[in-house]
Image (tube, rainbow, N blue to C red; front, side, top):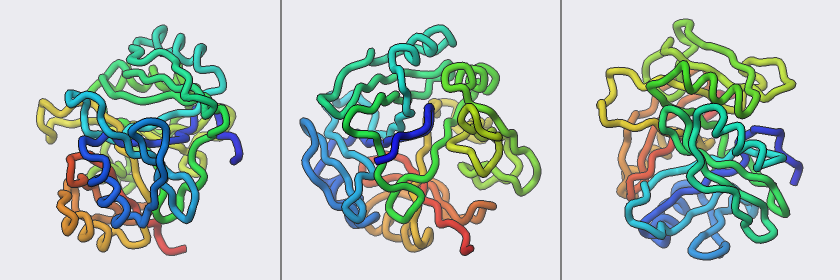
Length: 266
């Protein structure tokens, strides 16, 4: 596997109360197969390539949610930048065997994310293809603090999209305040973007916390949405078109939220 660019999303996992039920749900939805990981974890594979992990929650108080990890070449330095930039560290760097080193943190707006310093495991072996990760974005109410935080911690270069039709890929409203992140050393813009920041507006319930929404590529957004419903999941945002394809926001049958994106026909 090729190494991931510094600060690029390199892995996702989901914390579930019922691991076996999760394997059935995502196995049918995305065609994933599974193999045992370290502890109560199942590695998810698409076409035999690593794409995600499903983990059994060790504490019932933990949220049922998808988490995203960003690549770092020096996790100790990244953790120090998080603290210096107004974030908090939930889990100090801990070694995951020979696979690598991980840490978890929370940004100034309250959204949780992970860091991954690769050892033998770099991260995704497949992405931007059906059945694999393609995008992530943070939803926040503290735009100013959060924008500065991610630029300081990860060195992201930003592109703001606020034109009608430019769209926020996480809501049905086009033209909503949305910022794309490009890695340091790249020309910022849609072609280099690896993630983004959206704003939680007053249209959402006041109790909604900040969070990361991760997207998976699918061949047919509408069919995938119907499959989620059939499997006992819920539809948070029914399918709608954006400049980058057709998407919907969904929940699995245990409540974890994610999005699917059908790319436009080239």
